[in-house]
Length: 171
Image (tube, rainbow, N blue to C red; front, side, top):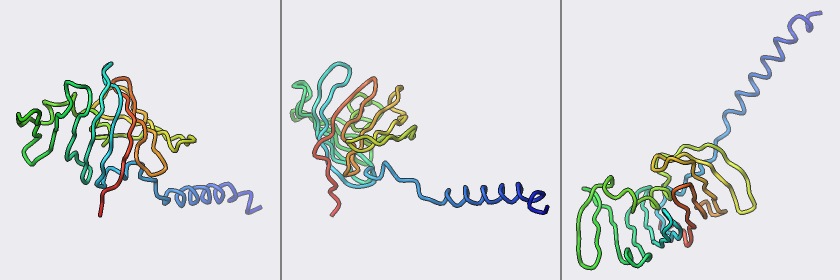
């Protein structure tokens, strides 16, 4: 008779305790690569134009971006310093704020997933497919994470690119 009276309450309490215990499990950090020092080559299309660039990142920040294509941008180098960004091409040098170079920086901003919010995770044969929201673009961003933890493909309505030669350069 006692179990019938207190049984539902006891079962509810056990259910709540088991849910709380499962909350202690760590959520994987899908963006852990961002805090490392790494280099990568990005090849893709932005606004109907193909591009190829090399990126160096240190501790989650862009350190250097060098375009290798298209021809008009080949050799254009963007480096970060304490005051902003330095752009160099064909012996010319100029300083800019990041807001002035949003289009040129879009591949790096998406690679670093600046301001990203995780929407969903799906396991696929290539690794993991993440859907994220990123402040730099208006559409959802799809990120395929390879087994090494680095993005292999990043795409959205505005841009899509493959990431190759991504490697951790921490000592």
